[in-house]
Length: 285
Image (cartoon, rainbow, N blue to C red; front, side):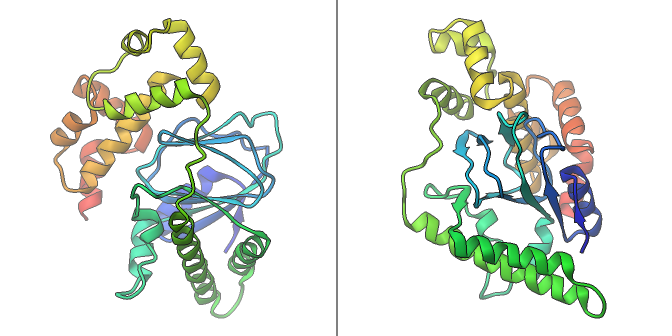
Protein backbone atom coordinates (compact mmCIF):
# COMPACT_ATOMS: atom_id res chain seq x y z
CA UNK A 1 0.00 0.00 0.00
CA UNK A 2 1.31 3.43 -0.94
CA UNK A 3 2.09 5.77 1.95
CA UNK A 4 0.51 9.13 1.09
CA UNK A 5 1.66 12.59 2.14
CA UNK A 6 -1.72 14.35 2.28
CA UNK A 7 -4.59 13.78 4.68
CA UNK A 8 -7.14 14.96 2.11
CA UNK A 9 -5.74 12.55 -0.47
CA UNK A 10 -5.98 9.70 2.04
CA UNK A 11 -9.61 10.56 2.82
CA UNK A 12 -10.49 10.60 -0.89
CA UNK A 13 -8.65 7.32 -1.55
CA UNK A 14 -10.39 5.70 1.41
CA UNK A 15 -13.78 6.71 0.00
CA UNK A 16 -12.89 5.39 -3.45
CA UNK A 17 -11.47 2.03 -2.39
CA UNK A 18 -13.89 1.58 0.54
CA UNK A 19 -11.03 0.15 2.61
CA UNK A 20 -8.35 2.30 4.26
CA UNK A 21 -5.48 4.64 3.41
CA UNK A 22 -2.35 5.78 5.24
CA UNK A 23 -0.83 9.26 5.24
CA UNK A 24 2.50 10.26 6.80
CA UNK A 25 2.34 13.99 7.42
CA UNK A 26 4.74 16.72 8.42
CA UNK A 27 4.54 20.46 8.94
CA UNK A 28 4.12 21.04 5.20
CA UNK A 29 0.40 20.19 5.22
CA UNK A 30 -1.43 22.84 7.22
CA UNK A 31 -3.96 21.48 9.69
CA UNK A 32 -7.55 21.62 8.43
CA UNK A 33 -10.22 23.78 9.99
CA UNK A 34 -12.84 22.19 12.24
CA UNK A 35 -14.10 19.34 10.08
CA UNK A 36 -15.87 16.01 9.83
CA UNK A 37 -15.62 13.27 7.21
CA UNK A 38 -17.28 9.97 6.41
CA UNK A 39 -14.33 7.80 7.37
CA UNK A 40 -12.93 6.78 10.73
CA UNK A 41 -9.60 8.29 11.67
CA UNK A 42 -6.67 6.92 13.63
CA UNK A 43 -4.29 9.76 14.37
CA UNK A 44 -0.84 8.83 15.69
CA UNK A 45 1.50 11.60 16.80
CA UNK A 46 5.22 11.06 16.26
CA UNK A 47 6.61 14.44 17.28
CA UNK A 48 3.90 15.59 19.66
CA UNK A 49 2.06 18.87 19.25
CA UNK A 50 -0.04 21.38 21.06
CA UNK A 51 -3.69 20.50 21.29
CA UNK A 52 -6.54 18.49 19.76
CA UNK A 53 -10.19 19.56 19.93
CA UNK A 54 -12.60 16.66 19.32
CA UNK A 55 -16.25 17.64 19.66
CA UNK A 56 -16.17 19.47 23.02
CA UNK A 57 -13.03 17.83 24.44
CA UNK A 58 -9.51 19.25 24.53
CA UNK A 59 -6.53 16.91 24.51
CA UNK A 60 -2.82 17.64 24.76
CA UNK A 61 -0.63 15.83 22.23
CA UNK A 62 2.59 14.04 23.17
CA UNK A 63 4.80 11.72 21.10
CA UNK A 64 3.17 8.29 20.97
CA UNK A 65 -0.39 9.53 21.53
CA UNK A 66 -3.05 7.81 19.44
CA UNK A 67 -6.48 9.39 18.82
CA UNK A 68 -9.55 7.36 17.80
CA UNK A 69 -12.15 9.41 15.92
CA UNK A 70 -15.37 8.25 14.28
CA UNK A 71 -17.24 9.74 11.33
CA UNK A 72 -19.58 11.88 13.46
CA UNK A 73 -16.98 13.66 15.56
CA UNK A 74 -15.87 17.12 14.49
CA UNK A 75 -12.21 17.74 15.19
CA UNK A 76 -9.37 20.18 14.70
CA UNK A 77 -5.70 20.47 15.55
CA UNK A 78 -4.96 23.79 17.20
CA UNK A 79 -1.89 25.94 17.72
CA UNK A 80 0.53 23.94 15.57
CA UNK A 81 1.04 26.04 12.43
CA UNK A 82 4.51 27.21 13.47
CA UNK A 83 5.72 23.90 14.87
CA UNK A 84 6.99 20.71 13.31
CA UNK A 85 4.22 18.18 13.65
CA UNK A 86 4.97 14.72 12.30
CA UNK A 87 2.07 12.26 12.44
CA UNK A 88 0.58 9.19 10.78
CA UNK A 89 -3.12 9.28 9.93
CA UNK A 90 -5.18 6.27 8.90
CA UNK A 91 -8.45 7.00 7.11
CA UNK A 92 -10.74 3.98 7.40
CA UNK A 93 -14.02 3.19 5.66
CA UNK A 94 -16.53 2.30 8.43
CA UNK A 95 -18.28 -0.52 6.55
CA UNK A 96 -14.91 -2.14 5.85
CA UNK A 97 -14.26 -2.52 9.59
CA UNK A 98 -17.71 -4.05 10.04
CA UNK A 99 -17.11 -6.48 7.16
CA UNK A 100 -13.88 -7.84 8.59
CA UNK A 101 -15.29 -8.16 12.11
CA UNK A 102 -16.69 -11.49 13.30
CA UNK A 103 -19.43 -12.63 15.65
CA UNK A 104 -16.83 -13.00 18.40
CA UNK A 105 -14.61 -10.02 17.59
CA UNK A 106 -16.09 -6.58 16.94
CA UNK A 107 -13.20 -4.57 15.52
CA UNK A 108 -15.55 -1.59 15.22
CA UNK A 109 -15.96 -1.30 18.99
CA UNK A 110 -13.26 1.34 19.52
CA UNK A 111 -15.02 3.59 16.99
CA UNK A 112 -18.65 2.95 17.94
CA UNK A 113 -18.30 2.79 21.75
CA UNK A 114 -18.81 6.24 23.20
CA UNK A 115 -19.90 5.65 26.79
CA UNK A 116 -19.16 8.03 29.66
CA UNK A 117 -15.76 6.47 30.33
CA UNK A 118 -14.56 6.77 26.75
CA UNK A 119 -11.55 8.88 25.86
CA UNK A 120 -10.38 9.55 22.31
CA UNK A 121 -6.72 9.44 23.31
CA UNK A 122 -4.63 6.38 24.10
CA UNK A 123 -1.04 7.10 25.14
CA UNK A 124 1.17 4.29 23.87
CA UNK A 125 4.23 3.20 25.81
CA UNK A 126 7.46 2.45 23.96
CA UNK A 127 6.46 -1.15 23.25
CA UNK A 128 3.04 0.00 21.99
CA UNK A 129 4.63 2.64 19.76
CA UNK A 130 7.00 0.09 18.24
CA UNK A 131 4.12 -2.32 17.67
CA UNK A 132 2.01 0.36 16.01
CA UNK A 133 4.85 1.39 13.67
CA UNK A 134 5.57 -2.28 12.91
CA UNK A 135 2.04 -2.74 11.55
CA UNK A 136 2.21 0.53 9.59
CA UNK A 137 5.50 -0.55 8.00
CA UNK A 138 4.07 -3.98 7.21
CA UNK A 139 1.09 -2.41 5.43
CA UNK A 140 3.11 0.15 3.46
CA UNK A 141 5.97 -2.17 2.47
CA UNK A 142 4.00 -5.20 1.26
CA UNK A 143 4.55 -5.87 -2.43
CA UNK A 144 4.24 -8.71 -4.90
CA UNK A 145 2.20 -11.85 -4.45
CA UNK A 146 -0.51 -11.69 -1.74
CA UNK A 147 0.39 -8.10 -0.81
CA UNK A 148 -3.29 -7.30 -0.31
CA UNK A 149 -3.74 -10.20 2.12
CA UNK A 150 -0.64 -9.16 4.07
CA UNK A 151 -1.91 -5.57 4.22
CA UNK A 152 -5.34 -6.64 5.48
CA UNK A 153 -3.85 -9.03 8.02
CA UNK A 154 -1.60 -6.30 9.42
CA UNK A 155 -4.55 -3.89 9.49
CA UNK A 156 -6.71 -6.37 11.40
CA UNK A 157 -3.93 -7.04 13.89
CA UNK A 158 -3.54 -3.29 14.38
CA UNK A 159 -7.26 -2.91 15.10
CA UNK A 160 -7.12 -5.76 17.61
CA UNK A 161 -4.26 -3.97 19.39
CA UNK A 162 -6.11 -0.65 19.41
CA UNK A 163 -9.33 -2.16 20.74
CA UNK A 164 -7.45 -3.88 23.55
CA UNK A 165 -5.61 -0.68 24.47
CA UNK A 166 -8.76 1.45 24.21
CA UNK A 167 -10.70 -0.87 26.51
CA UNK A 168 -7.85 -0.90 29.03
CA UNK A 169 -7.66 2.89 28.84
CA UNK A 170 -11.38 3.24 29.63
CA UNK A 171 -11.17 0.67 32.44
CA UNK A 172 -8.59 2.78 34.25
CA UNK A 173 -11.25 5.48 34.66
CA UNK A 174 -8.57 8.12 34.73
CA UNK A 175 -9.78 11.69 35.07
CA UNK A 176 -10.37 13.23 31.66
CA UNK A 177 -7.47 15.53 30.80
CA UNK A 178 -9.24 17.65 28.23
CA UNK A 179 -9.79 20.70 30.43
CA UNK A 180 -8.03 23.72 29.04
CA UNK A 181 -9.93 26.78 30.18
CA UNK A 182 -12.83 26.64 32.61
CA UNK A 183 -14.61 29.39 30.71
CA UNK A 184 -14.19 27.80 27.29
CA UNK A 185 -15.02 24.37 28.67
CA UNK A 186 -18.27 25.74 30.09
CA UNK A 187 -19.03 27.46 26.78
CA UNK A 188 -18.46 24.21 24.85
CA UNK A 189 -20.67 22.28 27.27
CA UNK A 190 -23.45 24.87 26.94
CA UNK A 191 -23.27 24.81 23.14
CA UNK A 192 -23.47 21.01 23.02
CA UNK A 193 -26.34 20.89 25.50
CA UNK A 194 -28.31 23.45 23.48
CA UNK A 195 -27.11 22.63 19.97
CA UNK A 196 -30.65 21.92 18.71
CA UNK A 197 -31.72 25.41 19.72
CA UNK A 198 -30.86 28.76 18.21
CA UNK A 199 -27.48 29.79 19.64
CA UNK A 200 -25.88 33.14 18.88
CA UNK A 201 -22.69 34.81 20.05
CA UNK A 202 -24.84 37.50 21.64
CA UNK A 203 -26.80 34.90 23.60
CA UNK A 204 -23.64 33.11 24.73
CA UNK A 205 -22.05 36.37 25.87
CA UNK A 206 -25.15 37.27 27.87
CA UNK A 207 -25.41 33.81 29.41
CA UNK A 208 -21.80 33.89 30.64
CA UNK A 209 -21.80 37.62 31.50
CA UNK A 210 -19.01 38.32 29.04
CA UNK A 211 -18.64 40.81 26.22
CA UNK A 212 -19.09 39.46 22.69
CA UNK A 213 -15.55 40.45 21.69
CA UNK A 214 -14.05 38.75 24.75
CA UNK A 215 -15.98 35.48 24.38
CA UNK A 216 -15.05 35.29 20.68
CA UNK A 217 -11.41 35.97 21.47
CA UNK A 218 -10.97 33.37 24.22
CA UNK A 219 -12.90 30.75 22.21
CA UNK A 220 -10.69 31.28 19.15
CA UNK A 221 -7.51 31.24 21.27
CA UNK A 222 -8.50 27.98 22.96
CA UNK A 223 -10.00 26.07 20.02
CA UNK A 224 -8.40 27.61 16.94
CA UNK A 225 -11.81 28.14 15.35
CA UNK A 226 -14.68 30.57 15.70
CA UNK A 227 -17.85 29.97 17.69
CA UNK A 228 -20.03 29.96 14.59
CA UNK A 229 -17.77 27.54 12.69
CA UNK A 230 -17.73 25.20 15.67
CA UNK A 231 -21.53 25.28 15.99
CA UNK A 232 -21.96 24.60 12.27
CA UNK A 233 -19.53 21.65 12.35
CA UNK A 234 -21.29 20.12 15.36
CA UNK A 235 -24.72 20.51 13.74
CA UNK A 236 -23.51 18.83 10.56
CA UNK A 237 -22.13 15.96 12.67
CA UNK A 238 -25.52 15.57 14.34
CA UNK A 239 -27.37 15.70 11.03
CA UNK A 240 -25.09 13.00 9.58
CA UNK A 241 -25.69 10.78 12.58
CA UNK A 242 -29.47 11.09 12.25
CA UNK A 243 -29.38 10.42 8.50
CA UNK A 244 -27.27 7.31 9.13
CA UNK A 245 -29.86 6.16 11.68
CA UNK A 246 -32.58 6.34 9.03
CA UNK A 247 -34.17 9.70 9.82
CA UNK A 248 -35.53 11.70 6.91
CA UNK A 249 -33.72 14.80 5.69
CA UNK A 250 -36.44 16.94 7.29
CA UNK A 251 -36.04 15.18 10.63
CA UNK A 252 -32.25 15.53 10.52
CA UNK A 253 -32.65 19.24 9.72
CA UNK A 254 -35.01 19.80 12.66
CA UNK A 255 -32.85 17.89 15.14
CA UNK A 256 -29.56 19.51 14.11
CA UNK A 257 -30.55 23.03 15.11
CA UNK A 258 -30.10 24.95 11.87
CA UNK A 259 -32.35 28.00 11.73
CA UNK A 260 -33.55 27.47 8.17
CA UNK A 261 -33.36 24.72 5.58
CA UNK A 262 -31.39 26.80 3.08
CA UNK A 263 -28.56 27.32 5.58
CA UNK A 264 -28.65 23.63 6.50
CA UNK A 265 -28.52 22.54 2.85
CA UNK A 266 -25.64 24.86 1.93
CA UNK A 267 -23.55 24.10 5.02
CA UNK A 268 -24.09 20.34 4.80
CA UNK A 269 -23.32 20.14 1.08
CA UNK A 270 -20.19 22.27 1.44
CA UNK A 271 -18.83 20.24 4.39
CA UNK A 272 -19.80 16.72 3.27
CA UNK A 273 -19.49 17.10 -0.50
CA UNK A 274 -22.99 15.84 -1.33
CA UNK A 275 -26.49 17.07 -0.53
CA UNK A 276 -28.33 15.78 2.57
CA UNK A 277 -30.69 13.78 0.34
CA UNK A 278 -27.81 12.20 -1.57
CA UNK A 279 -25.99 11.42 1.69
CA UNK A 280 -29.10 9.78 3.09
CA UNK A 281 -29.45 7.57 0.01
CA UNK A 282 -25.78 6.56 0.21
CA UNK A 283 -26.17 5.71 3.90
CA UNK A 284 -29.10 3.40 3.20
CA UNK A 285 -27.47 1.64 0.23
